Length: 443
Ligand code: NDP
Ligand code: 2IT
Figure 1 (cartoon, rainbow, N blue to C red):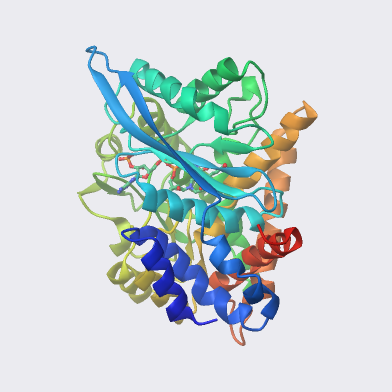
Figure 2: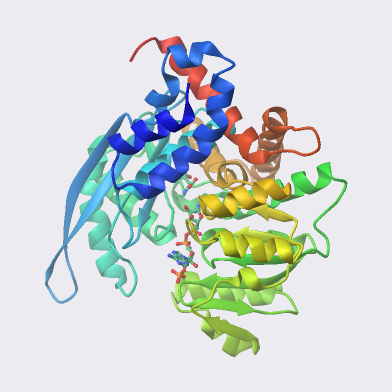
């Protein structure tokens, strides 16, 4: 199988989808050399089949704003692959949402879910609805209208959505409430639910905690740890908040957070108290991070990203392509030696190449942020059993899952003098899905 020809065919078949091309390129680069040593995958054309979604559902969402104006958005569910379990993946509400972004996310999700060791296929969905500045009532009407259409395509054994950018506890509540009403049943057809209605302990914290647990695994293989490490985090939403919380608990120093309007630089480091302020500011007040700089008298850098700040470890936890080649070069120049991606594909193709070539500990999102969907998988398990585990039990399972993901990356990514985590994650994620697809024959 030839990489250039494969990518040419893919880009021809999917024009104007740069994020999707980028996600496939990063996988294909690692998986094609592997396929060339295992002829059964090429014969069954597994990679071609894995890069074509099972189906894409797209629909109109109409809703009324508080002034009585009719508003319209476009929404999607990309059901990418259900070879190893029901479709599973988040919903994103952001003005930037388009098919290229959701296809990249659904494709990544298939590999990530395979790595969790749990039985989940890959999917992603969302809408170009922009929740910024909307009232709770407007968000509720949008969510109800969105789910009135989506409900017929999801279900606890079919497709189980969850949150992502712009979809947090508030939105999941409205969406699940409408699902329950439309379907006439209470089933675990969504995850990230509130603890009062079938949610799992630790789900809210799981992506961030998992991302830190993964960094701990990488460091511990080098006989190192997180204590006293200086950490730069981007984002200040769900993933960034709980990445920061776990780092503080482990004795690391978190000196930045960011949002769309800039970043804060707090050289003393965040504390639990400062973090509680951030969580309230971003989750309840939905305000800007500049308020933090005012409250705690630290530097605020408007319209900038935090990558110029000297650190030992970087945790990009905001969005795709937020860390480019120049940023990567700056980080490496400052001797940053660990990058653990909380966001999905936060590093550009060129930036990721630099990290790989430098042989630092570089964990791609599909490995490092898999803790979120892993606990979603455990939420499904608990819903099916109709009982709930304790916080401690779920957290322990999360730590074990991140350990197993790390082991799989090492198994497939060990090179002579270092572990190539990108290679390891891509091949390990591929093998399980590919073998299942081969078992089913041609379909
Ligand atoms: P949230 O909506 O809770 O937070 C997103 C954060 O990123 C906010 O601080 C937001 O800024 C910032 N951000 C979003 N878009 C941009 C942009 N274009 N430029 C700069 N900053 C931006 O989302 P999550 O924390 O849930 O998701 C963050 C990332 O993690 C995403 O890549 C997501 O796909 C990934 N992820 C999430 C999981 C989860 O369980 N939630 C699981 C695995 C991965 P502002 O506050 O200004 O809006
Ligand atoms: O990107 C992701 O893994 C998520 N947004 C979480 C998906 C999920 O189903 O919990």
